[in-house]
Image 1 (cartoon, rainbow, N blue to C red):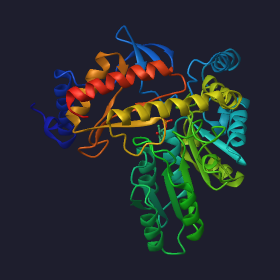
Image 2: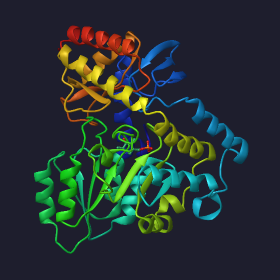
Image 3: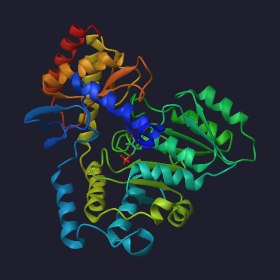
Image 4: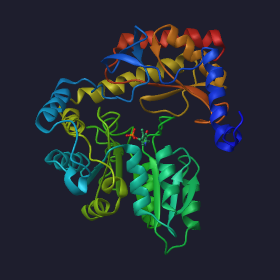
Length: 402
Ligand SMILES: *Cc1c(COP(=O)(O)O)cnc(C)c1O
């Protein structure tokens, strides 16, 4: 390249990524951004003309394509069209948004709720609006990137505590001056590892040190608790989380994010959080689909039971084949491979046998902890999971993982 542009640090970063992706593609080890051409349900998809079992979906309750939810979305398009007149604060609010927020507040047993157009934007905006310079944020080391970005954007002092380690969290709470605002924040279910935060202990520590508590329920809403209400219900606790955040893009087959909590806090966010004020409202179809989904979860409790049974079958089968599934207790199941190369190999072998699974490698996870990040949903049939287990066990032996 002849210009200065070709050698500066931006160009170097672009080149490095281009080279890494090209190398993987050349070796047939690039599995990302594959186009699904048809979604049969949350358990089967068509990719490259092949009917594959889906083991990488976040649709834990199997709600994608649910007739009631699809009908609600279509009716909303007929009534309101495909977009809104702008941002929520000005002309963008529909009665649908108000009803959706009431539905979420009700589902979470909270006073009120606010929605945003993505979970990522929700974390970014809510954390950086509530917290600021001089405040302290204590964040679990394995928290989702959107939490990390929100913490950094806030300008607050940002400390990570060891993953789900309550002694370490307490040590850091002790270090904080008593007169500063403190926020403790964690994924309820960790998105790469599938384990559950020790909420009862976190709550005690937050009470003892007078800290705010925020839970990201991206992978626990519609998954944990007897009726799918999430982490508080799972532990049989009442209203103990101040900032109840979740997404509308995983178990809820739509898009968007929400926070539920005390009415004053939600009203404050409506008037102060920039993703609400400066970004367009959720489209009508997505708001209607999300609202109907919360109702379906309550109307069809068998989905939670089936999800639980499928999770037990899948984790149990992997363990008895000799795989290390780390600390998972939920439908997010890490299948530990070791170095990145082995994770690519296991993925390739599984995909050749029509399992849609994907690898998670460094730097998303630490070096040497590359894995498949497999998921099951309520939509999987027992016999399909048995087939997946056979495929993974055979390939795992061939590659030398088990
Ligand atoms: C997926 C995810 C988000 C972001 O949600 P989107 O709605 O996809 O933007 C936030 N937090 C966690 C833990 C997630 O897994």
